[in-house]
Amino acid sequence: MIEPTNRHILRGQVLSFRDDPFLVGPDAAIQFESDGAVLIENGTIRRVGPAQPIIAEHPRVVVESYTRDIIMAGFVDCHVHYPQYEVIASYGEQLLEWLNRYTFPAELKFDDSEYARQAAEFFLDECLRNGTTTASVYATVHPQSVDAFFTAAQARGMCMATGKVMMDRGAPDGLIDTPQSGFDQSKALLEKWHGRDRLKYAVTPRFAVTSTHAQLEAAGALWRAHPTALMQTHLSENAAEIALVGELFPETTDYFGVYEQFGLVGKGSNFGHAIHLTDRERQAFRTTGSGISHCPTSNLFLGSGLFDMEDLRDSSADIPIGLATDIGGGSSLSMLRTMCASYEVCRLNGYNLHPAKAFYLATCGSARTMLLDNRIGNVEAGKDAELIVLDLRSTPAIANRMQFVEDIWDVLFVQMMMADDRAIRAAYIGGKKQYMRPSAQ
Picture 1: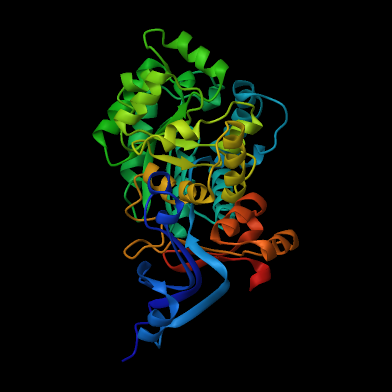
Picture 2 (picture 1 turned 90 degrees about the vertical axis):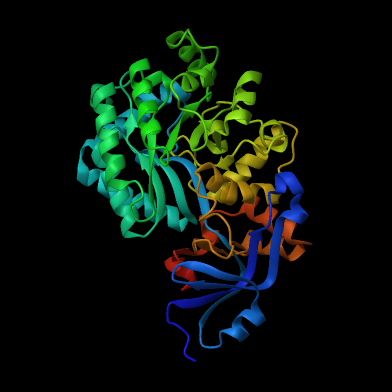
C-alpha cells in the first residue's frame, strides 16, 4: 500500500507535556522520548511516541531526522507589539516617558500601508527565526496596520492574533481615534479577519491611560457582541501608570476594577504585565479566569518591577499565565532569552522557576491564555503541527556545557539560560517547514 504523500515523520528527541508542571510537578508533567517520532498528516499531528514502531508502521513515509535535537511545540508569545521592533534597545526611560519618546513616534509611521506591510513581513520572519509560531500581537491605531499583519500571517498559514489599538487620549494627534471611530474600525476589522483561516481578532484598548470611559465602554460592547474574539490590554506595569489610572478613574477601587467596570475581564482577556497587584486584584484574577502575560525582559529593561510567579501561578490553576517578549519594551524576540529573564526575576523574588515550568509557560501556558490550547502549544495527537527543532549545541559554549549534563532537566535549563535564536534549527507551520537555519541546510 502506498502511503499518502501528505504524511511525513519528524524523528528526534521529542518533548511534550502530559499535564501542568505547576500542579503535578515536573516529572509527572512531561513526556520525553529520547528517540521519538511525530507523524504529521495534513498539518495535524497524528501520532507521537517512540520512533521505531511509528516508522515501522509507515515504511513509505518520508522521515526527517533530527536525532541530536529536541522536537517540541513552537513557542507562543502572548504579548508583543510588532510596530515597536524598530525601537528595541532605546535608552534610558521608564514606561510613560518611553512611550512618548520612542513608541509613539515609531507607531506614527504605520499610517503608511507599505511601511506597515514591510514591518509585518520582517516581524513574522523574525518570529520564525526565533521559533515563535503563534503570538498575540498589538498593531497600531491605524486599520491598515492590522490588514498588513493579518495578510502577511495568512500568507504563511500562521495562527496569529492581533487587533487595532484603540486610543482616544494621551497620545499624538496621528495616533488618536474616537470612541465611535475606534469601535467602527475595530468592528469592521474583526468581521473581516476573525476566524479567517487560522487568524483571531483581539479587541485592543491599549490601556486605561489612553482610553476614556466612553472608549472602554465601546470596547466592552464590541467584545460582548463577539465573545469568540480575544481582548488584550495592559495592567499594573509601572507605579506612575497606576497612580495616573487612579486619577483618571477615581470611582474604581483599583486598576483591574477599571476593566471590570466595562466588561473587559473574563476568559479570553489577556492582561500584559500585572506586576503590582493588590490582594483584591489577585483574587479577581482567580475568580474571573482572566489571563496574564508575563513580560520579564520588558519589566527589567524599563525598571517596572518583578512579577510574582510563585503567588500567581504556583498557588492557583485558575489564572492562565503565559510568557511574552513585549517587544519593543522587551529586549529580545527569543523566548529562550525570555525564559532566562523569567528565571532571574523569580530568583530575585526568592523563587526557583523549574525549566519544566518555564517551557510550559512559553508553549502550553501562552496557548491557554489565548484560548488556543485545544489547537496548539503541545506535541500531541490531534493538535496542529506547530513545531520547532531545538539545536542543543548551537554555540561552542553550549556544546561544551552539554558534555556535563545529567538529565533532561539539565538539558532544558542550559538551553533556557544560554541559548538564543541560534538554537532554532527549524520551524514548522501546519507541518510545513517554514524556516531552516541556513547553517543547518
